Every structure is written in structure tokens, then in C-alpha cells.
Length: 324
Ligand code: PMV
Image 1 (tube, rainbow, N blue to C red):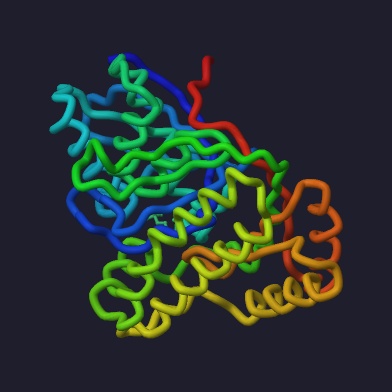
Image 2: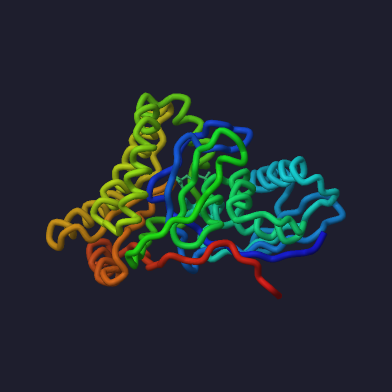
């Protein structure tokens, strides 16, 4: 086995994945659609280890009791059952995206790790096949294999549940409004389990997801931001509504999240349909807009909510090998 280093960027779902149809294979219950972000990602180095799997996050050696280590070891053992390699791995990561904060750090981590693993074992997989490996670690990671925009199929089998690239004729950007960079209080894995098992709104979220996905895919291909943005807001609101009525209720949003949403509504009232919001398993607001409007939108939102950190990102590259 060779050593390998790869990098992948985080992605933000415009149409959300929430809930699983197969827990062992980590297959989503609904299709999703995302934008891969430029400059916000994780670099992962993989090398053989003599003494069992080892995980080093930002120079900190994780203990085998840590949840991150357990999740990684599960993933590597799933890969072992598919590819029958004899080794253990040392996995070192460093990220430019806050860790476990609802900013898709696990998507970039598992996409980069899968890319490095692919090279280390000299597997000759297509990107679609590679995305199924990444999905085993974190379903949203499948989408980070691709540059720009990507879809993720539900599929009945491991092979069918792959991501695929999508094209958008518009130059789009995302304004990321960081409400709080601390770790989230509940993992998305746990939150999905509670929501799909107890929320009376989850069946409604699931029932409408395929239609939302197909309509968003069409709007993306046609470059219609108002249609895409409206579907994006519907998808995130349905996802959070289904979490709110779960038992126990799950709420990732903060007062500042709602302030930002109000500021976006006000912007649209005065300037037309130029900015649309989405939130994931965290309080941050991600604003989709045309590239030409991004600085104006960021400045307007900063004026309304001065304590919020903001950055602007554009569609970025997919998972790539780093040659040292
Ligand atoms: O792949 P996970 O387990 O990190 O879940 C991602 C869930 C959301 O970010 C809320 C939605 C999505 O499609 O990325």
C-alpha cells in the first residue's frame, strides 16, 4: 500500500438529504443537490500503520474511545470488507473549515479520505464509483467528490446510491454567515435517527423531496436563481420543521439565524429575488446568490447583523490528490 494525500472541499446542500433508507450502507432516504465550495475543505494524509488505525486531527492524536475514531474505524473496516486490504492506516487531517460545526467538515473529510484511499490501493474507480465509497463515511461526502454542483441518488444498492455532477450556466456564489463556530450539540447522524423515527412531519418531508430535487435540478440547468432559491428555502424549512416536531425536539437554529433570515426577506423586498438562504445541522445561514451580487449582499447582511463572521465562496473543485 502507498501513502497518499488528498484534499476535498465542503459542500452545501441546496436540496437537503435528511434520513436514511439503509443505515448499514448509509444510503439516503431522499435525493439531494449541492454546491461544492471553493477554499473550505480538508486535507487528509493516509499511510500504513503497524499498530492499528490511528487518527490525528490537527496534530491531536484521537483516542480509540473518541467518537471520531470509532466512526473512522467503522468506515475503514467497511472498506476492508469491500477491498480486502491487510493493513491498518494512520490518518492525519487538517482543515480550513470549522470542525463539527454544521459546515460540512465531515463531507470534506470523508471525500478527501476516500480519494487518498483510492490512490493508496491503486483502485481504478470512476468518480461515480468513488462517490459510493465516500457515501459510506458520510452521505454528503459523496457530493464533495465532484466540482461545482452535484446530485446524490437514493438507489436501492451500494452501487446505485452514487453522486453525479451537474452543470449550472449562471455564475453563482454563496455567502456563508457564521453564527457560532462551536461544535454542534447533536450529530446529524443521531438527529436524523430521532427525526425519521419520531417526527410526524418527516413523512411529508420525504414525500416531497424527490419532486423538490427534480425541480431544483431543472432550475439549476436553466440558470433560474429565483426558482432554485425558492426550492432551496422550502427544502431547508421542511427539514428543520421535521426536526422541531421530533421527540425530543431538535433545534439547531439560534436567534441570530432568524435575524439573518429576516434580513434576507428585507433585501428581497427592496431589491428583488437576489438572495436565498439555507441552514444545515447548525445555526449558520448560507446565502445563495449570483456572483455579481455577493459583496453587496454580504455588506448588507453585515450592516444588519454586525457580530456575524462572513465569507464568500464560489463553486470549487472536487476531491483531488495532493502531490508532495
Ligand atoms: O452527511 P452528513 O451525515 O453530514 O449529513 C448532512 C446533512 C445535512 O448537511 C443537514 C444536509 C445535506 O444534504 O448535506
